[in-house]
Picture 1: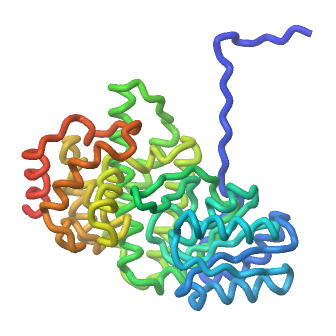
Picture 2: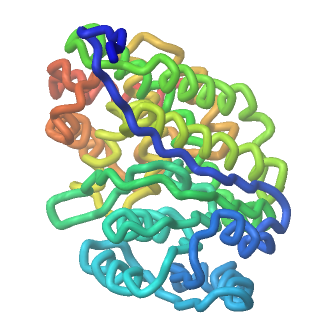
Picture 3: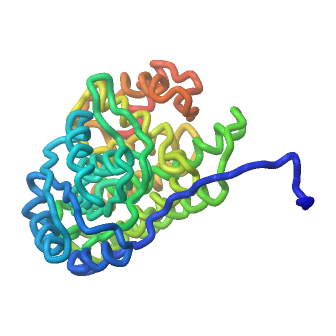
Length: 354
């Protein structure tokens, strides 16, 4: 049999996306039904944190225990050693459930990938877009590692729980979404200068998600379920954009390199999304884009716009800008164009000007 075929094109791509996404009031109660709908098996490992155990972890265990053999793992930090312990536990069950913030979800995400077990993401805060993405950030003594994993097979985001979390966490998530705007500009720059492949679908979805958050900045208010619902939907959309692209490129550019550089030289200062938001203002200025509009949106949301607001002095921020080019050097961004110390100092001073 002869099959007509274009001999010059033989391309395949595997995209993994969440199958079920539940966002709304008291949807945590539907966790057992979600697991049953997906036919994940008869046993589960609930990975949670010390604080989130009381917030939602205990309830998740109680709900699942009615139909599933359930174990609990308390992940008090994210590290290669903790991930290995979770992997050992995961081999004894059919699927994982991550109940907590970004560190808990990233821990379960890597462990599920390495043990070939599906996992359900149950975020207790909307602090960054890792709740639905296929990548994880793992700190090491040498700096943060960005690891490829797999997205959750389902997301169960209870807006009542998320809205009750400190507003700083939600504002950080908003800043992480807004940073997609500069990440896409960096991706397009690399496409033009380095011929890096780009996905129009992924970049468009990522940009629209960021623009929507900027446009609705006035609606972001503390302890409101409507706000939590809006932010979680945007975080899931950002995760989907990364799955379509097959990498974190639609949501990670120079602003993330700046954030990771700060992780190295000023560990423990500021949340991930907060640092990305500050980096976004800087990189948008370099791109000649609307950095003032983004700064205003971050202020309305309640996110920091200067290093000083997260306890980082200007000299440290300058060093982070200069170090950024050495972070993931294979990922070309506007910060890889040969930034001088004088320019870096000027950019940090610019952040405090009206």
